[in-house]
Image (cartoon, rainbow, N blue to C red; front, side, top):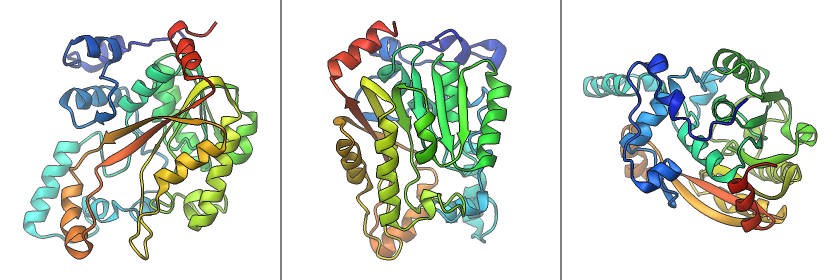
Length: 335
């Protein structure tokens, strides 16, 4: 499949979406990088949201294949339960929820969905054109579909068969010729047969924040010490498939001990895992996230325990080898 590093053609195609999607400011930085490569990535920005909606209109449905009942046990559980009218709310709250659903119809739907614009940026900034991407914690379809549409090769693994089936169906519907592979199974075991990679990019489960299945190999169902041990082992084995002088990216966020409320320090644990696997910690970015559902939850969590509303995720970049050589590979492309 031809590499399409600048996807304006299909993101703005009248044939796909009717009116062309607005690409916002045509400043030198936007023209060169799509969005400026700064440490704060603002997904609330209007141009970002328009671009995200254009990606979603391709037919990406990352929530398909998920166990909605279990997802409602997550930190967003009360919000999602109200969304699906499983909890009673006041008339004022009901009016707000109705407005909320209208504002987010078609691209939020009460589930945590990976941001396709973030995907696009990470691939184009940190992976050689047409390069191979590996993703040991694949989850939904977004990272694979975006990779395929941009002309990259993608290999992802997920434990749940229903998720893999749903992802493959979306590939068939959106980009059937794209070199996208989803494998089903324990990524710690499957990763050994993954192709050699030019970029590692993934988003792991955040401990027990969202429990995805009852499978004994499911990381999100483990105790925290067991989770971290298996998480570190999977990262260590995965980056062995990464070629020398290449980058690795991961999206993580801290989460709390459900019993004590104490933060686990997951971001630091992730940095330690990559360093112990032989990579250098190279870039630290923050992705601002939507506050739409946060406004429903913040009163209770702050008034009861002074817990600050979390409205960001951490995007961590590591390098295996020499960052200058890794950058050279990106600028020159694969030979």
